[in-house]
Image 1 (cartoon, helix red, strand yellow):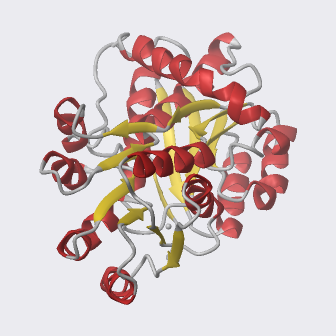
Image 2 (cartoon, helix red, strand yellow):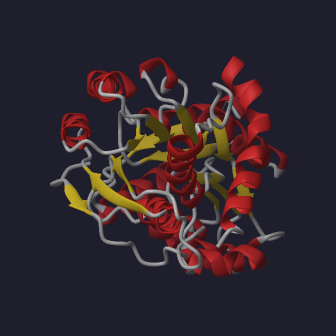
Length: 333
């Protein structure tokens, strides 16, 4: 609770920092490793004249999970501005993530940014990095434990708060029985989102689906809606899943909300088919992680004062979608 209450005020700080700096110019599969820029990076303009640094970014992205494209786009934009050689890699398994961290330590990178879906499992690898004098920044997940395992700064969304906010919006709209769709059972951040919804609407029900098999996801949600006509809202935890079940949900007369955003979900919000999205701003997470490692290495700056810097929840709905849709199409929102 201390983190949630105090860190909320840091959202504006994160956004202001991103705008100021920009003005200067889920489940199986093999790991990937490349330093090539992602599409839609938004780079360009003057490059910092500081010595070239190498920063490793490590995520738990599964193959085909487009959410992480935005994280990488933000990281790439910061790297291009800051004269950084960005080494991006991912593995959906904690053991693989630990190996990638150790590989970065062995190659003597200047900093590591890591998405901490399992902070406890990554703790030994992170300790190896900090023992070697390599600063580690956490982002996206595990923000409540990241400092405990050695992170210098943390950028992400308060998932409990986000879930509570979703539940409140649904309740205010008259919703009474939401169905929360968890596409990766056991993923703490996803379960926390649904727990937050349930804390606002006690009748919230969860359904676990196999996120790597979209036809199965659609079939499972459809079967549940047919079985229980009292379900009036469906909450998905990722934009691709919202699009996957869109016809099923709206065709059954229910309303749909989702976490996260992509181009198709933005269009569906414009069309009135998705009520709203709660966006953790992954582009900003990637940008801030890399840019603030650069600031630390070149000027000893630390953002957040020992508390997480929040990038969400940021809601996207009919009131602001016209402004945001273009950025979603460019893969930065």
